[in-house]
Length: 110
Length: 122
Image 1 (tube, rainbow over the protein chains, first blue to last red):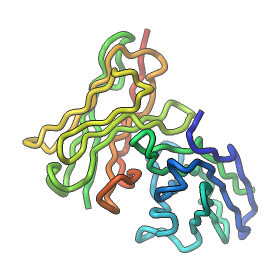
Image 2 (cartoon, each protein chain N blue to C red):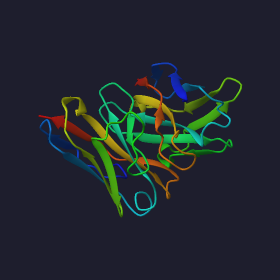
Image 3 (cartoon, helix red, strand yellow):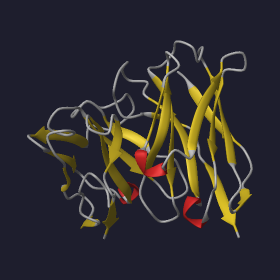
């Protein structure tokens, strides 16, 4: 049982826009920065979004993040086949005094 | 840019101690990051924070591990290590070392090693 709640799966066709949600509480999302990771099979998670909506250098602007209250979202526009991966949200939890993660969303590009 | 690399055995017997090391390159471990942490991912499952050691030397662990984890640092080798005692099949996972590099503070990690699969055998 993950502290942050994500839908287990999402899908879209090439060129579409998809969003993935992440729900938490006042002790985590409500009070701290949300991060989003992309994990391709057999590889380590790679950060796509940090501090709610910032992209590290090299991450395409097709990826965007937002946060409102105790929920956050990752949006992927212009969907591509190479976007097929697992996506995780993460945030610092003040009660746990450590980072917590969502259960992950498997994105399928149809 | 800091780089992290895990090393250690891929197979551990049940009830024994799992030991992994993370070697940091690209900067001194004593001051380059707010914390140095370990995260694991059981096969086909999500990510779980194990614990971390602060740049100041203090440590923090996930209570779910019931005091089985110990993280230490060796500044002379620019490495930090994880020991997990009394392992069981449920501890089979890919173990990642990770650190926050895009900020200094209580933030999720953004810089990860490539991972080390550890299988617990009975």
